[in-house]
Structures are given as structure tokens and as C-alpha cells.
Length: 406
Image 1: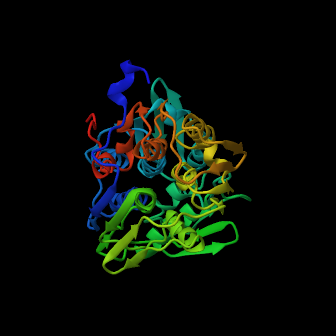
Image 2 (image 1 turned 60 degrees about the vertical axis):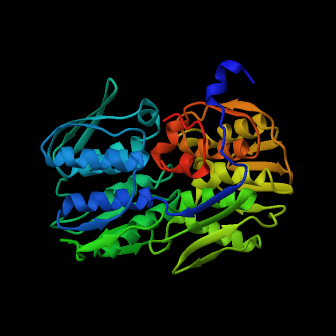
């Protein structure tokens, strides 16, 4: 490996993974709750998260409450989309700054829906101009959801205190509908009445938050990532741990059951340890595409030919995750064939990965996946490792990275 890049090489304190403790709550749930709290200041939230996506949204909502008009939202898609919808409820002229890569992602369907509601979103250098008239007295809005269900989720999370019934028409195709289900779960727990009629969500007039306090829950995708390290390298015990909201990424527990993987989840928490690895896996990731990069890296150490499919929307994530995952696996010496909706991976038990350099392309989940090869003994020269702060700032500390760099 190029010695000039050795400062970026991942070095861990041990080749055995062991973590007993807590991890941050789900940023997906926390961000949804923060949006609702911005409509109801008396709502008390109990959560623990230092994820950048959460911190950016918290600051933007504080700035909005203080009457500021310019906001910085970082690189989080949920943060960006939910906050734009929140601005659309409040008349004013605003400027929104975000990472250029996020601004370049396909968002047009959201902008069109917001324009129908009375908010014009236009591009300016390094950001967006948002001219909001507040939601017009319109009974419905069409929100195309064939690229992302987050567009509809962002509007649904802001359907509080409307003095008229309101309908969200999702269109014929809804991608990642499980995440829209999560938004519905959060809103309904808080008291919103939602009627699902085919591809339409119907919200009654004058919806009010009916609970005084709500507690978030552990981040399922972070739990899955650490579970993969435990299965390959050691053991994991997390407490507290619950699945009350129906996070889509908790689907990994069903995968584990199907593969014969043993774990324990009860009132005391979650635990899992190194054991026999699954063979010849085929799994549909339609409802939990965020698992893809780490799962692909994990399966490269499991014997047999594995197929991940059902998630063509991976190309529109923080990176093109199909292309980046193939790049990662190929760099580590893994045979990987990309599919339009996933990947075929040639797994090998006891694999000794090659040394390689990798740029995660500002994608936190690609950094998590690369770390699996580093922990397995590969000299991984990982650029921009701090990108994990986006969702899981504890990550490197939990793994015992010696040269954490921040």
C-alpha cells in the first residue's frame, strides 16, 4: 500500500470484537419526532443521538423558531426533505444550504408537491431559495413516490393543525413503502388519525398531538451493522433494545431466523455472538435497502453464492450503492456481479481480503462496509472516515479504532 496514505489505514486495537453497552437511537425516528415537536412545543421527547443528521435538524428547527431565514442541513436526505416540508407550513422567504451531493439527488417530485401546496423551491448557488406562502386551502396533493417514499413522509409528518381534511395521493408506485409505514406509525402513536385508501392517505381535519411524552428506540441499522461484526469476530450485547415503531431495518432479525442464526432479544436487551455462518443466501431488500452495503460485505465471508435483490432505488442513495459496493468488494478481492436491483456475491469462509484504498463517496454505509474488511485483517486505506458521524458517531470507538483521526 502507498506509504503516503498510511495515515488513513484502519488499525484496530484487537482482532476480536466485543461490545457491551448502548448505541444511539434511530435517527429516522428521532427526526420524525423532532418535526412533530416543532408543531407542538409541549411534546417531550426522550432520545439519545449525536448523529449529524439529527444535530443539523435540531439546529435548523431552533433557528426557525428564533425567526432566522437561512439554514444549513448537511448531507442527510431525511433532514433535508422533512425540513423543507416544515418550511412549507410557515410563510416566509428562506435559504437552505446543503451538501452539493444531496442537492444533486433527484428531489423534483418533492419540489412539485410543495409548489402545489404554495411553496416555490428554486436553485441558487450552493443551495435553495424557498418562498413559502404556507399551505394553501387545498384538499389534496399528488406526491410521486416511485423514487422515494420520503417525499410523502415529509408531508405527512407536517399534517398537524390543518383546518380541513387532507389527502396525500402517492401515485401508482411507492418505493420503500416500509419507511412511509414508519412515518405513519410515529404519527399515529402521537394521535394522528390516518385512513389508508388504496394509494391515498387521508388525514382528518384538526389533528392534534394527544400524548405528552414519547421515547425513541435503538437504531436498527446500527444494530445490524454491529451484529455482523459480532457474527464474524466476537460478541455484542446492547441494552436497552426494543422494536415498537416497526423500523424497516429490523427486518434483519427475520433474515437471521431464516438463516439459522441465533440471537436473543428480550426486555433485558439484544445479544448475539460468533457462530456458524449462513450459506447460499438469497434475500429481497425491497423494504430495507440500507442494509445492502454491510450485508454484502458480511456475505463475502459466508460460504456459497449469495444474491441480494429487490432494491433498484439503491442507485439514488448517498452514493450509487450498487456501483460503490461492487467497487468495494472487488477491491477486497471478492467476486461480485452487479444487478439492476442488487448484487451476486461469491462468499468464502475464512476469506483473507486484499489490501486496498477506498473512498466512501460521502456515504456512511459504505464506510461501515469497508470497516468489515479492515477488521478482518486487510490494510484498508479509508478516505473520509468521519463520514460515519452522519448516522453513527460511536462507530469507530466501539470497534476500537486506534487512529480514529477525530
